[in-house]
Image (cartoon, rainbow over all chains, first blue to last red):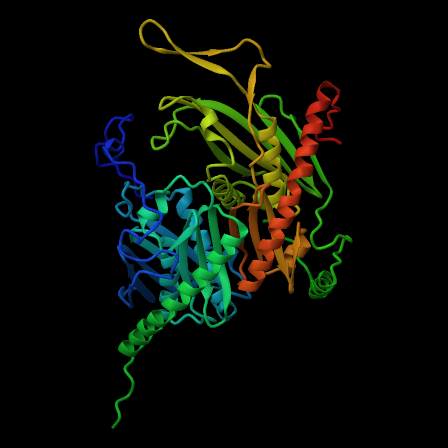
Length: 274
Length: 291
């Protein structure tokens, strides 16, 4: 694992200068439009830019940009399983790995995978597994690697979308595309597809119903393949949040389908009418 | 997780039984197995509890240490979770085998407690910005028979109830150095308010119905489960879908509602039992690990 042995670090007791910034207390208003002009309580997802097939070495790859969140995913496989004792005779294995570049968050992260990265990788695995036809790839392994280049909120949801696009681009057989959407509940209102500020700084003194929710959805089968929430919410708010996320996924679906169709056409243009 | 091999005939048997609200051991779909809780089992810790749920046994020890508070929240203490899957539970956990499961469990515990109300973190502060109590919650899995999340969360709640944090006073001496004074009385300690500590309920989807507290056989017949952590007021602090299958959105709503109902009903009897045990005081019979 690469560690940083060339840089001279400051003394152990040094702290990041961002802690000492004379910041006015970050109180994001809980009414009115959000910082980037989108609406609250409405399914207002950020416009996405998606491209498939960017990495020529990988079997399949995808890049997604939503607001300032940028991430890319590469898929390798189906390949022979690396560890022979884990070879499954009846179905394939899906390995997922999600990493954050050290410069992706406002605070510099480290190269060594922390427990949060492992948690995201596990969530990604659980969300993608129901969609991939693993029984068609016995004794093989499919690797999905997501790299977050810039974290500006809602990273897991976009990683799920990007990974399923990359799997489709690699030609792996799937039952359906998996789309991700997340919301942040803030008191009585919810914001869909939160930005980094909205995710990490809770506004207002309202102590009820503060939390975040991420849903991974298969649109044509109408099944939820991944669900994760934290913070504290009542059950009604949670249910409403899940419905909102599903709507957000439906909104994203046509864009993703178009990007995939474009990539397929570019790779193998249809025979000309002659 | 320790798994059992279940034949097709057994799966069909379990599925049909659950469809008629009758499980293999005679329980209903929302009944728990026989649960035994004992606190104060390990004398070297500040708080400990052992929970046996059917054949699943979990031991939690809490140690309070003085540490530096987190830079962003200088007037709060914090909790650190660590789950160790002992090789006693199943040979799969030998060496580093249980590490993945342990990380998954600890990460979920961090999420469950990641809110303002579960544990009053401000009461863990000694000197803002300089000293605070850090509670190291260490969970040890002794036996694995399904439903680890529920057993662990109940054990943590019991252990936090049992935790006695000594009262300290920080004073400055002549040169400006800080001195920590501990009171001489061993019973002069601070207790935590565990009213708002949530309990986790795992609901496994088997066929078209969901079951609470699934055994390993029932788990082998289910494709997906939903973990939901509920406080005594009915607030949901964490939900998570685990397993390699997908769930219908209607099932998720049904399961959340059932989970909230079951979780809410779990808190009152648990607090009663813990308080009864506390009142027994010296008359308490120690059952320990051999009972």
